Length: 436
Ligand SMILES: Cc1ncc(COP(=O)(O)O)c(C=O)c1O
Image (cartoon, rainbow, N blue to C red; front, side, top):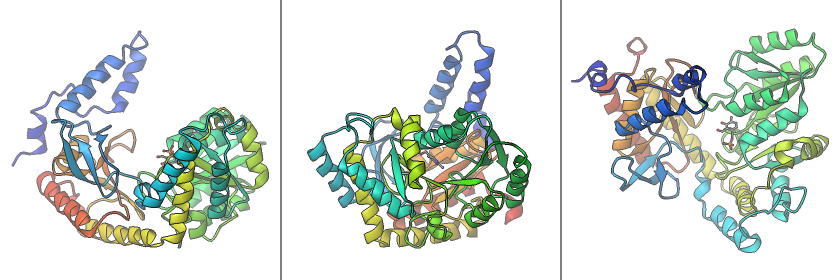
C-alpha cells in the first residue's frame, strides 16, 4: 500500500498543499497590484488538474439528499449523495416552498425594483417580517439581502470607536467584518468559555462605551452549541447587551426548531437575534429580530439595509412558506435529529474526530491538508459530495471534511457514506491511534 509520502512524491511540491494563507502573504511582497494573482491562479489550476480543488463544483439539479453534479474531470453529469448542503431540513426543495416562489414570481415579477424605503417593500416582505418576529419571540424584524450583510449592517451601525464588541474566538467572518467596519474595539473570549467571557466583561467595564457580546447559536465549523443561558446571565450581570447569530440554529435547535432562544427558554429576552435564510429555511437572505425601537433605528441607519435592494418577492414568499412548513410539518425536524444521532454515534464508534459537534454540522478532522484533499477526491469519485476545509478557514492541523446532515438523508445514504469513510480510513489512517 502507498503511504501518504509515496503519494505526495508524485505531485509538484511547488503547488501541493497550498492554501489561501500562502497567497495572502505573497500579496505583500509583489510590487504590482495584481501580480499576486498569477501564482495563485496557477496553483488553483494545478490543484484542479489533480482533483484537489473541490470548490465551485457545478450543480445540475436541486440540492437534496442527492444531487446531480457536473464531474470536474469529464464534464459529465453524475448523481451524488449530498453531504455538503446547509439545507438541514430539506426545505429548499419542498413543494410548498417552490410553489410559493412560483406564485410570487407570477404576481410580482422577478425583482423588488428598489430598496425597501422606496418601492421595494411589498406585502410579502411585511408578512415575512411578522412570521419571523413570531418565530423568534421578538417585537419586530427587518430583512436583509444576505446573512453576511445582516451582520455587517447591524454591527456597523450600532457601535463606534468608544464601544467594544466582544466576540467568541470562532466568530464567523461576517461578524468580524461588521465589527471592523464599526470602528469599535474588538475583544475576543475563548470559544464557549464562560470564565474567559466573564474576564473580558470585567476588563471592559472600565471603559466608557457600550459593550455588545456577539455569539453564534451553533458554530459553523464545529457544530457545537453556545451555552446561551450562561452567556445571557453573564451579560445581564455585567450590564452589557447580547446578540446571537442564529444562522445554523434556526430550524435545528429547540423543541419546534425555532432556534436557540427556544432551546434555552430565552424567547423575547435576547437583545438582537440575527438569522439567515440560507441554511434550514432553504433560501437566501438574512434578518434581525429585536425590540421595535431597535428595528426602526436599523431601518434608517443600517447602510446594508438602507442602500441595498430588497430581497425579491419570490424569495421572500418562499421563506414565509418555509416558516409555515417548519410549523406544520414537525417530521422534518424530528428526522433531522434522528439522522444526527445515528450518524454521530456511528462516527464516534469509529473514533473519528468530530470535534464537539452536537448538531447537523459534522466535521471530520483529518489534520493534514494533503490527506484531507485526497479523501475529498476519493469521496467525490465514489459519489459523495463533501466540503474540504483547510487552514486558514479552521485552525492549523484541524483540516477537515465538513459534512452537513439533512432531514432528507435516508439511512441508506448515511450507511453508504459511513462505509466509504471506513474505506478512506483503511487507506489513509486518519484516526489518531491513541484515541482507539
Ligand atoms: C454563523 C454565520 N453567520 C452568518 C453567515 C452568513 O450568512 P449567508 O451565507 O446567509 O449570507 C454564515 C454563513 O455561512 C454563518 O455561518
